[in-house]
Structures are given as structure tokens and as C-alpha cells.
Length: 217
Image: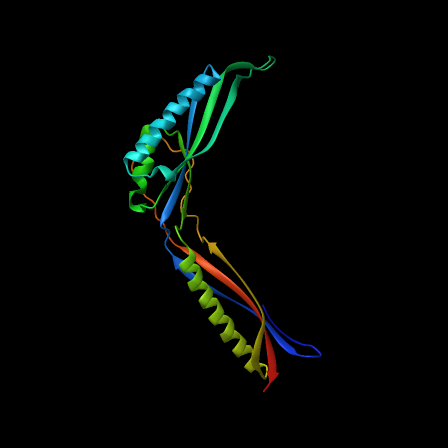
């Protein structure tokens, strides 16, 4: 957005610019789920808890820190048999547990999934790549955006017959762009081969907006 407006007391240039920097993800969070069916609700929950403990032990054994393992959900559902013309009959209960594991060792990413599946994981629901600290990349993008803002202000002002005066107003914002979702895994069958993850790149984008005072040349 670029506009030049002339008011009774001043002529101003309203302009925006952006800056980008590409960064490679350095951490990943994997979302697992575990399911167990039993005749009794408490039995289903207990058996699922045993599986969850085994999964946590397996993840810890390959170097995933305890602080990076988090239970994300626990629920129990009644399972019914539906026969046309009859009332549903209870056939048991299914327990569901969700667990997230975060690693900063992307080279060993596949091992985490393989070990979790071997320990009892029913499905890998999602894999989210991310950044441990994005502040340095944000600053680089912001500097690029501000430099772009000043260059554009000088260019448009000169083209319109003005010189740039004071910066009257300024605002900014930053965000992460993911051009292509790196990984999304639904149901994962047991016994599959190793998992290979291509981390790709994120784009950190900074947007800046400024209003400059203009003076005729």
C-alpha cells in the first residue's frame, strides 16, 4: 500500500514494506494417540495408562527429555452395537489417550516414531515442525522491512517531486509463513519402515507501515 495525501497543513506519504528471512526448523512436536478397548471403563483406562507408561519409558530411553513429553488428552467412550429395529447394546468401552513429544534432534526424528509405535502407539496424528527461538530471525526480517520502507519512501517521494521529511507514524507486525505443510501423518500402520522427515524451510516475514511528511523539491 502506497498513498500520497495532501492536507491543508501537510503532504504525507503512507507506505508499507515487508522483509523476509528463510529459516530451517530446529524442533518437531509429534502427536501420538493410544487406544484400548475393554468390557469395563476403568479397565480400559487402566490398560491404556499402562501403554502410555511404556511409551514414555521408550521415548525417555532414546533421549526425549521428560519436560518434552506431555499428555494432551484423556477420554473414554462407550461402544455400542447397533442392530436395525433394536435398541443399541453396550459392548464395552474404548479409552483414548493423547501424548505429545518434542525433539530438537531432527536427524533422529524417525527413531522416535518407530520406538513409539513399537511401545504401543496406535496412531501418529500430527507432526508440527517449529523453531526453538525465532527472535533473531524476526529481528533480521524487521531490519530488512524497515530498510525497504525507507528506500520506498525515498523512491516514491522523488518520483512525485518531493523530499522525505519526518516519520510521523509507524507500526509493524511479524509472522511465520509455511509455504508447504512439512508433514501430516494420519493412521500409521504397525511394522512400517523408518520414517524420513524433510524439514524444509519457514519464512519469517515482517510487515511495516509508515507515514512520512513530504516537502516539495
